[in-house]
Image (cartoon, rainbow, N blue to C red; front, side, top):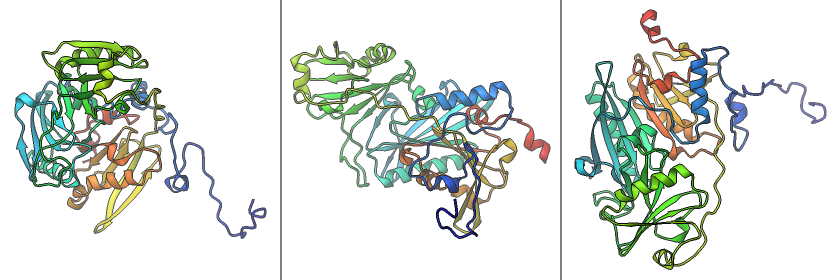
Length: 404
């Protein structure tokens, strides 16, 4: 090969095995998608293997993070003027895509209080608001002694646990809260002209939610269900490729979106003239489903700071629990959730850079995944959720105690 290509005899040749390609090799490709089952330590209990496989094959983003049944207590705050403003409990579950929020969730596990700090970032929220939500999430965690799990959530990529907090009553509206930020909207926007269109999303009644979209024909898709509210009629539109379960669920959320209104249900192709008139007339829209994103292999990265403000990342293949270094920060990519594991002996600088580490990793990802859409979960050593433990071939809860 060297002779054929006229390369010098001293050119280094490195043998790479399929399924164990190092990061340096993958970086030469524009995109790189792993196949299911390539990574993984040999052996391991069947239960752990099944847990890993379930995470990889699930099509919904951020599946797997379910620390409890979502029946705990929560306080919700909206970022306003760089500070957290409490949200009235009677509006819990109502979000604006132009804002960012922080949710402090408390639950009990084996008689012990545990906390999750979600910071939800609307797709039209400003950079300042998103940054403020992350800062306040860290502050609340510090007030709780650093024992909370921090979870960054971006609109449209909510983990199942987050959705189930609202028991099928979550709605995301267009617009945002007036504040000192350069917000895309200068006022709360529920409605402008009496016409609103909502896309229905979810897989069961507990994670059902509705997202307001522009009331134009191009917002429709044949694989979805939509609620169109007009001054005179509320329509429930069912696309021809809409899953049967979603069709049934959509009927339930219509009451949440348009309480007290009678609903006219129709299938794609049977729309009355008033439906199209409310959307500005007939036009083109999505009539076929996009292909599902291929499953990705689970990867572990060792992140540490050898010099001030200098991040070094090394991938660990065939990893086990013993590869979690107590004096450093690790990034575990499950394909749909990126976990940041903070060792008890990691430095203060490494802890502060924990989220930045994951962002750097996502920004350098060679796949088609969008960094801003990825769910990032920050956990501390000894506070690992079951979804994290399932990604290892074996998990010993007493390992670090024995090593002391």
